[in-house]
Length: 455
Image (cartoon, rainbow, N blue to C red; front, side, top):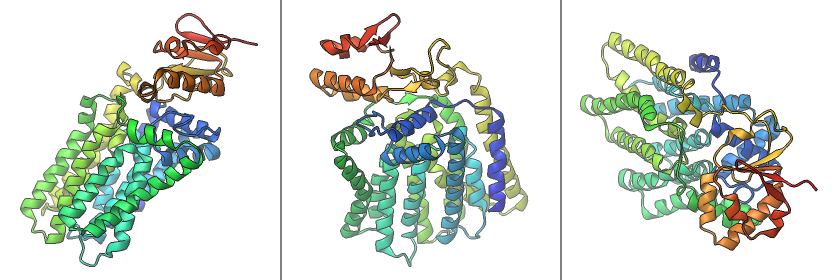
């Protein structure tokens, strides 16, 4: 594993030298941690679809390291290292290959270089760790001497934890149910045990928000509305195809070659089926994400590593095997580096990174609220905005009646007391209509700017 650690460090150097700007999701996660540390309750005082456990991590990281980008990189590095080590040990433990080696760890290390946003502390990365743990217990059920009851409990519990980190990982619940029933052969009692364990982390969250008088908002925003808001498209579908097509094709080629050229026992057949379905389910999570970007597909890397390793292992000629491995070592990082190098100067990349800064004429001490999707205006000012995910905010407000919406908006303005409101969507007049107290608090100016009236 020392060599794997060395490779992880070396492969990060080109991304570091490219001086990639702060991304909009990273700025959002920083603000979420800052607001949580200031006593703002998620989903009540801050409207966003980030998972409650992810908010907890950003809150703690803000207290310890102010949610700096360096802390994001360092924490993510150790998470990635753990995932690589665990995947390699898991595949050895379940006898996935005829020979035990570090090729799966090597392949996974290379896969993490496909995109620069794989290397930051995203909810998808944190949640994928627990998806991997749940997958590990599921795969161990294919072996003869599996200890069923503890494994089922942990399988469901880790999957529930993953969902509390990242909403899109809800797709793994039906995967676990179908895989457990159709492939592993769970009984009805075992299935009930799995579902009970899955609901435990969610129950912990529900109890916490109930005690904080925010249960209704948690259920409404995170469980019911998160997938209804139109996702923010940071990256085009053609870019996603450019990044993932080659590794997915190689993995599928490894799957078919494994089925045709290798004589597998029943256990290995089940493992093959489980990981193929797992890979397809990962792709289906695309329909539940709130932001379209490469990091959303981190959870499928173990499955890609499993099938790609089969492709390398099934070659009997050592020269051919080495050629495949070295080609993989060169081509996959080049895909990630070339994509960033091309995009970093492209105007289309502005939908993903934060380039703009507030004008120098606006004091940094002023707190602003943006009624819109622009996050870059917060880079040099104080944040006074509970509506960090404005698309989700609009969906949330639309399901209220007019009076509830006005009362919510007025409470938020009184609590946050922003010095400037930037109305990008032209909604201030509608939301503040027939609220006399706001006329004495704020004065509309030109270009959608509403300024607080000094007393």
